[in-house]
Image (tube, helix red, strand yellow):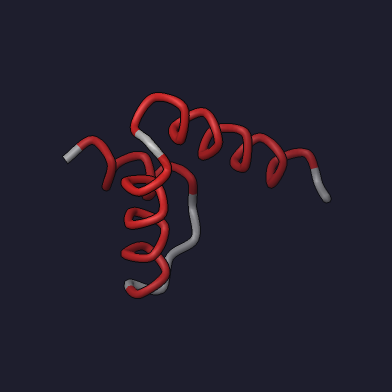
Length: 48
């Protein structure tokens, strides 16, 4: 795993702690449906 991907994974896992697993999973699913796979996008979805 490259470093940047690892950092993105940590960001998403940290969001699970603050926003909950259900919300983080839904945000990941929405991002994947939209064809993106960036932690920044997933965190943005969670912030809405």
